[in-house]
Each structure stands twice: as C-alpha cells, then as structure tokens.
Length: 630
View 1 (cartoon, rainbow, N blue to C red):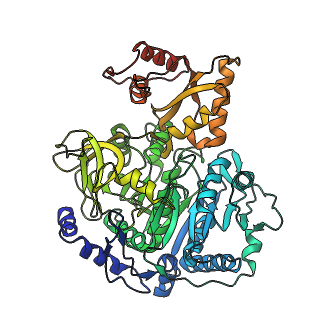
View 2 (cartoon, rainbow, N blue to C red; view 1 turned 30 degrees about the horizontal axis):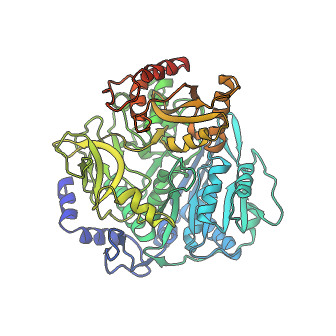
View 3 (cartoon, one colour; view 1 turned 30 degrees about the vertical axis):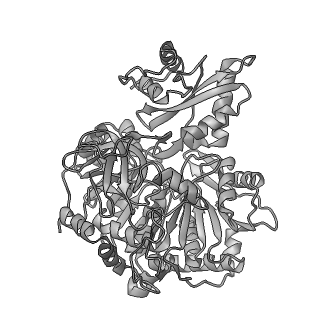
C-alpha cells in the first residue's frame, strides 16, 4: 500500500487501524476496545487490556527462539569497549535486577529515578522497572543537583538507580555528588539508592542507603513480569530545562507498545533482526523510544553508543560504527552532522568506510537546515529523512514514511503527517489558515496511542498547557505552515523553549536563575542562531542601582549560576550587562525582536515599543560579547 492509502485507512476507521496494529503485541488480556473517550478531551487507548512491556521487549523473543540474537551492542569509544548482549542474556540481567528491586520493596506503581550515562545497565534499569510495573523516570546525567531535586520531589521515587560517573572526552563527570546534593535539596527522600561503580571513578557509598550494583544483584531471585492495565504509566519523562514545577510527561503502557512497534517498519524501514542505531541519550525521549523500547519490542538489534560524533576519536566515528555493526537505519540530530561537517567538510572520513549496509538516515530534535541535509546527501548518497516529533508525542508525528513509501523530499520540511496525526495551522483566533501561511501548529484530538495522556500529578496544567488555547486540538507550541501538497514546515517555537544541540531548554528557566543574582534587577534570555549547536542562549542583565561589582565579574557569576542550576547542557556562555531591555509600553520584553536583531533578520518596528533606540543598544551589546551574526 502507498502512503496515501495507509493514511486514508486510518482516517476512515482510526479504531480499526490501531486494533489491527495491536495484533503484533503479546497481551495477557487483549484489548476489546481501542479508544476510551469517556473523559474527553482526556483520552486513553486500550485501557481494558493487560500487558507487560518488558515481556514484549525481551522475554517473548527468547520464548520464540530468538534468544541468541543480539539485543544490544554497547559501543563505547571513550572506554574502548564493544560488547554484545543477546536477548537471553538481557532477560537474565533484567530479571535479576528486577528481583533485587522487588526484594527491597519496589512494586507495581512505585516510582524509580534512573540517573545514568549511556551504558547497558541504564537499559537494564528501565526494563527491570517495566518488568515489575514500577514507573521509571530517567533524568539526563548532565543535569545539576537542583534539576534532579525538583524531579525527586515531583516523582517521589522509592529508589534512585545511578552510576558513579559519566564520561566525556578527556574528563570524568562524577554523578554521585550530584545525586547526594539533589537528595539533600529534595523534600522527598528515597528509601534506597543503587550505584553502578564504574572503574573510571568509584564513588563513596552512604552506609544503609546506598548499595553497590554488583552486590545488590549478586544473590537476587529473578522476578517474573507483572501484567499491568493498558493505562498504567510506563514512565514519567520531564521536559528539558524546566525549573520550579517540572512538566512530567506520562506514557501509558499499552498505547506505547502498539505505536512504537508500528513505527519501526513503517517509518524506519527495519525488519526484525536488522541492526538499528539511534545516536541519542537515554535521558531524552529518543533514548526511551528508539534506543530502548521500540527496537527491542520489534525484535531489532539496538546500539548503545557512549561517544560523540567528533573527538572519540575523530569525525569518522559514526561511519566506523555503521560499517562495523552493519547498521541498516540510523537516527541522530542535525547538530551531530554539523559537528562532523565542521571537522570533515570534504568528507574524507566518509570515504574510509563501506556504508553499503545503510539504507537511510533520519534527523530529528531540531530543525534540519537545508545546507546540512545537502552536505549529507552529497557525501553519503543516501536518503536523508528529516522528521518531527516531541517528548510529549513519544514518536514521529510528521515524517517521510520510508517503510511504506519513500515520498519526495522537500528541503526544510519533515514531510507529511503519519496515521494518528491530523495536522492543522491556525491563526490566533483558532481559525484554519490557507496553505503557505504561518500560524500555530496544532493536532486534532484525540491524539493517537503512545502520546501523552496527561502530566504526572498535574491534570490542570496538562489542560492549560496543551488543550485550552485551541479547543479540540493539541497545541504543539511550534509555529509553521502547511504547503499545497500537505507537507508541514516547522519555522519556530511559539514559546520560550530553545534548542541547544538537540536539547530543548527553557529560556524562562535560565531567566529565573539569572534573576536570583543579588545584583540583577531584571533580565532576558533569548536563543540565537549558532552554526554548530543550532541555537545558543544569550543573557541580558540589567543591574540594580548601587551594584558595585565590575560588570565582567557579574557576567562570570551569571554564567556560573546557570551552569550550577541548569547544568552544562545549557551551554550558557554569552551574557552581557545592559542599561535596559526593549519593552512594550505595557512592560512586555520584546524577546522575539531581540532574536531577529541577533540573527540579523529583518523585522518590523513594534508599534508599542517604548523607545526604539534600545534596539541599537542591544545590537552593540551583542557585538561587545563577540556574538557573530549569521
């Protein structure tokens, strides 16, 4: 069937479409119904079913004779390690860890926070939670103690599973002091912690609370899979860069299984047994969906990569991994390829490797600029597929569906909506806009299986954040347009979230940190274009009267504060002191105009600006801190 036929079959009967897709899952009690709309506009899928995620990701493959197939390939150029883990070995590892957690009182519905780098044990921890029906919440290892603390208080975990350290090229990042600091800051205290001791740095454990992973699992009795309801939460994943009250995206178990399994063939064009690689981190939604769950559920071999696109050891590391492990389909962020292109503009490293095994490359996480895609097409001679989705959605909403039909590629567009997604572009009044006109991108309700049904302990916030602005639709927070062929173009965020190297970070969260500096009266943070990372945050601070510290010291303090409170992942280095900020007469800071000034884009002088001269001052300030306009 062609894409249009598949999409129409979903449109004609959405519930029949998803019930058919559900046949690929092994159920303890099969669903009798797909959509539950009793509580609209809050919807659920397959709520009447009973199922276990870990069984579908691991045990069923062993039972069906695929135990010897490799489930994970761990490739760590940083530690010079390559290790293969079969489905049978993975089953033993996961069941044993689950047994140890069960013996310490972790049961169905308990939360467990996972704070780990890209090692196989991170996947073991996720799957062990799923095995017990516990709800995991993975927190990216680059987040500071303050960020981890707010997540501890929101999720109230029974346990934290962590590693002693993470590894970056040339340095060791100690995780244990960050975890200890977070527990100290948090009101909620976990019952116990499990720490994977890595040889690059062994952490000191707190007696009575902390357990060495190796000792913890040594004599454990393996645990069986616990069937859970279709609407039981599989995990909570906090959206990046939030401070204060975090937004915990919830994923229901049954819809998650059905949707992810469907995507592996229809979108990513892999068959069971093929090797698949998503070069992301377990702390992000891509790591959840496409390093851990989807490939395993579908019976693929998934690569766990602990390295960087450049510097571990060079700009050829992607190509080495693809050739060495026979990767058929590959997924990463445009930032990664910008880094590779910067190091190897003529593609000398590409020529060193045989990439005949590779069928296509997928990009997501931020807007893929045409220059990067054209460079990739020229160097690799493979289809380069941009696609669009969000933490909230859990898997692609708009994509060129390669496994169904390879459609024409339009540079700058992630292509067409997939089954489950009716995309619309609306004006501020909620009226549909014609093709080619820029507006708010929304998705008609109900969202398909596997997308967020709510936020953790925050239903009101869920409604306010996503459902209230445009009744009957889910508000994506992105702005863009749809062309006459139905291709979507994502042009910008409509809120204050910026994208730094594929990591979505809140400028509002950074402003909260800057505003806490004793000398800062008010501030603004904007995202400016950066050739390598996509966007970088720039801070503007206005000082209190009577502030006596030299400006460069205050700037240095501000950079340090953001690094401590948000983490190095924010890449916050550009900051300047200004006398005032451009505002409307009502006092609203003109951040959008500031971004256009920074990026040397034409802009219309805002009619309500209180003093246009301030815009020239912003331009001067950017020049003084060395920001080179694109």
